Image (spheres, rainbow, N blue to C red):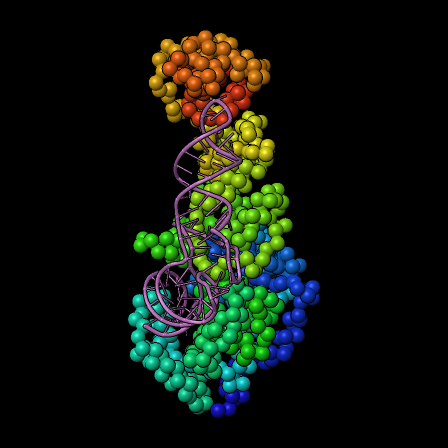
Length: 561
RNA sequence: GGCCUGUUAGUCAAGCGGCUAAGACGUCGCCCUCUCACGGCGAAGACAGGAGUUCGAUUCUCCUACGGGUCACCA
C-alpha cells in the first residue's frame, strides 16, 4: 500500500507537518519540578463532586510546584454541549477556590475567552491540528480509514449507543466476531478509497493497533504504582466522521502540545491507558505522568458501592449549594479524603490557609470512598466555628438571598443584631459549633426575631403557679445593666425564695428536699424567652433581645400558663 | 463474559515482615455545667476466606469470594 498516496487522498487539504505544529508550541519555560496540570471536562454545565475532587488535586500540584493549571474544554461530542456550560463550570469552580492560570476563562463581556499561548483550548477549534497528526499517522502506515455510507452513518447516530453497550452480552463469540471485523476493516485497496472519496462517503480514521492482547505492558501510575496492563490490540477510532477526534486522540495531541506533565483523571480511564501509551508512542510524544484517582461512591439500593452518578444526591455541586454548605467546608472535606494526613495537619494548624498544606501524591488513596455526609457536617461545623461573625453573616446572607428571602431581609434589616447573635460563643479557644450549613442558621437563631419566634418547648412537670411566681419575680427584678454574675445571682435568689435549690451540688445530694433546682428556674426563664429548653447563653440572649422584648415574652408566657 | 483493579471497625483511614493494629466521623457512657453547644475522659467496634513463603504475616505470592472499572463515531 502506498501510504503516502493514501494520506494525500484522505487529507488533501492538510499541508502542514507535525514539525510545523511543534514550532508553534515550544516547551514551557518553567522551573525543573513545576507541574503542568489541567482540567478537561466536557461542557455539560454539570460540575460533579468527582470533578471538583480531581480539580483540587490538579490545582494543588500545579500551584504548589510553581507550575500551570489550565482549563481545556473537551467539546468533541457535539451532542453533549450545552450553552453557557463553560461559564457555569468556571464560576462554580471559582466558588470553591479553584482558579485557572490558562485556558478557558470568562471575559469581561461574560462570554468565554481564552488565555495563554498553547491554545486553542477548546477541542472543537483544534480540528486542523488533529488532522495534521492524523495525516502523518496515515503516511507512516499507522492509521487507516474505514468508510461508511451517509445512510449507515445516520442509522448509527440514531441508536442509543450507551444503552446498547450497557445491555450487550459479552460472550467469547462476540469477542471473536469483533476481532474478525477489525481484521476485515484493515483490508482495503487504494482504488476502493478513491471510489469512496469520489462518492463523498464519510470515513473514520482508525489506529493500526500493534499490540498483542495476550502480552502485558508495564505502566506507572503515580497513585497506583506499577501496573501491568494488556497491550492495546484494538484499532480504536482516532478521527470521527465529522473530522473531530474522540477523547483518546485529542488527549494525546493536546496534552503533548500543551505541555501537560501530569494527567489527573478518574480511574475509569485506566483501561484505556495502553491505547494512550500506544498513541503517544506512534506520535513520537513523551508520555506524561498519569494519576488515576479513585472514585467517590454512593450506596445503591442493594447496599453496594457505586460510582457516584449524576442523578445521585451529592453528585452535583449545586446540591451542596442548595443544602447550604459553604464552599470552604466542601473543600475541606475533599482535602481530608484526598490526603490522609490532611486532617491531622489541620488539627495542628487550625488557622492556616489550606494552601499551606503540602499536598502529596503518595498520600492519595487508590480505593473509592463513600461520600459521608456526617463527616462533612462535622468538618463544616469546625470550619464555620473558625469564621468570624462577619463571615458567618455574609455567608448566611448570601445563601438566604437565594433560598430564604424572609430570613435574608431580617438579616439585612439589622446587621448589628445579627453580628451580635453570631458572636455568641465565637472566637474563643472552644467556639460553639451550632451549625454546619447556612440552612441551619435560621432554625438556630429564629427565636431572636419576633417575626420568626415560634415557641417549640413548654415546661413540663412543674406547678403553673411556681413557674409564674418565678417568672414574675425575674421580670420584676430584671435589670439590663446587670453583669452576668449579678444576673445569675438574682435567679438564684428567686430559686431560693420559691423553694428551689440555688446550688446544684446541694440539690443533687437531696433532690427530694426541693421543688427543683436553679437549673429548673433557669429553664422557666429560658423557655419563656426563647421558646426552647435549649439555647445559647441566656444572659447574652437577653442582652441582644433587649429589655422590652424579654419582658414581653415573659409576660406573655405567664399569661399562657 | 474477557481484561484491569480493589478489599483494615457502620464510614474515612494509618500501617509498608515482629505494634496491646493509630487517628477522625458516627454510636454509647461518664465528667464539666443553670440548658444546649464546646471541651475532657472512657467504651464497644476491623485486618474478607484459604493455602504458601518465613522463626514470624495486616504487610510478600497464589487461589477463592465479594466489590468497583472497562470493553461506543461519550467523555
